Length: 386
Image 1 (cartoon, rainbow, N blue to C red):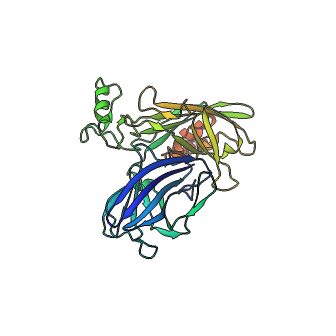
Image 2: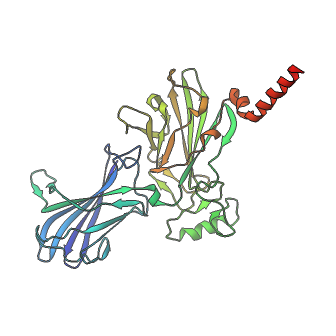
Image 3: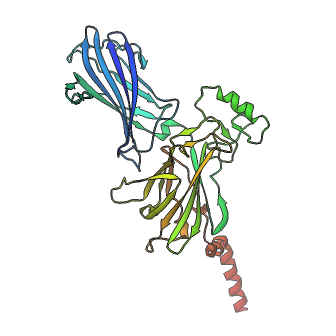
């Protein structure tokens, strides 16, 4: 998915004036900066389209070359430093802007918040001038100068704690494996009162309303053992002769956020034989060329593309039908569960592998400790020689 924002700026020796802002959306196959999307970035293109006596006029365009990481509300903020060292966010002092190709001063130290931290921007690099075609296609103009700035995302820089977790269950085991305790934080109302909200509290509505007036981006979550804003549950639902079926449920525990245009990225080896998906959209991602084990899922427009805030409507769900590959399919050793899951581009914390639901015929081996087994063998040997 490519998302671009374009601004027309008048840059002078003292100020920048923002004339207008438009946004455009196109859908293409691009990449992002992580293991499943290795080349993704946000690119800022700065085109000088005309010189003025005290500076220049520029068109600034932002392109989001990431497949599954988009910009949430309340939006993005772009800043940079001019020659005089003044920090800008959309407008402000840039020092001596320059009035020709030889005297122009390229802005530096770009910062991008989308809406919070997480992006690191490299230096501006002068590139081949952009060519512009008029709407009627009859005339082509060229920028006086063009430079690009590349910004890449780091989840570690974006937040100190994870933002989502995964729970697991299956039809062949009654155990529901929850998200790991304290995945995104711990309940601590003694030292941090108000760190979470009890969904059964009679004051729930007033608490949520008061926090809704705040401009803080920090989530206000429902009190849970994991304290994550988002939980993804993967349930192995049914087993057929040639197929097997999974139910995926995404639950929002954040009272401060409606997730618009959410997406889920799931890695599992059986996505090369996905037969049908119900009530979600699906697109295969192939970061490793011919290996088709990664899928991007997102909501159906006007049906479930909006994940509502915490509460009765704060969840979306779908079922997936996979065809079995006899050479690889198994329910043993947690094979039926995903290798990793991303929500809106952030990696979700999985339970430890030894906690995964196991097949009933493996229960005896799982529950008998090695020490107990050795003691039993010793007693058996002693009884035999007696």
